[in-house]
Image (tube, rainbow, N blue to C red; front, side):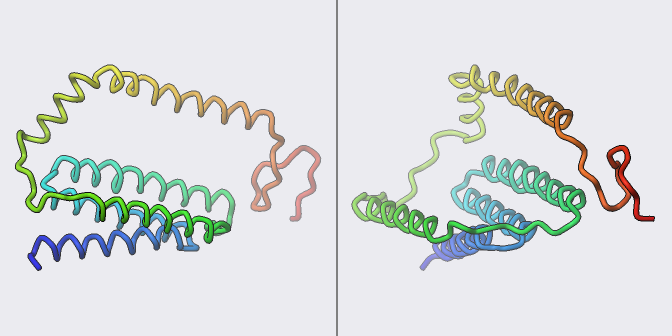
Length: 186
């Protein structure tokens, strides 16, 4: 087996293990760390396919940005709630069966498909090709996303403010805000 094959199968094993650990971990924080492992391993697979741009995007946006955001959300939520948040896996068997059927379907598809023995040569610089597509054929959807994503975040913020105004304040045992007339313990 070549070095490329050994690298691929090693990365594939780490990716599958990280993905399974993400889904099966009971601790939500550990699950996010396993997700970061899976995302970085995916970037390693992109590097092996000579897609350096996609690997950099994978590490910067997903492993860096999204995982950091989720870690901060978990830390802040645990602080507000005052207890550790655990992940519930109530539907593990149906999920396992669906995953198994999906894997078998993909496996049968690849058994029936003839794949080339050699990697086809790259026609042009991939970063240049992605830039041409984004700024050519896909410029309108790209610009619409640039407008709609911040706007949807603003709408979600307004929705949360409106929902908080309608909800009565909860009594917080650590000395936080209490409704008028509530007795204190000390």
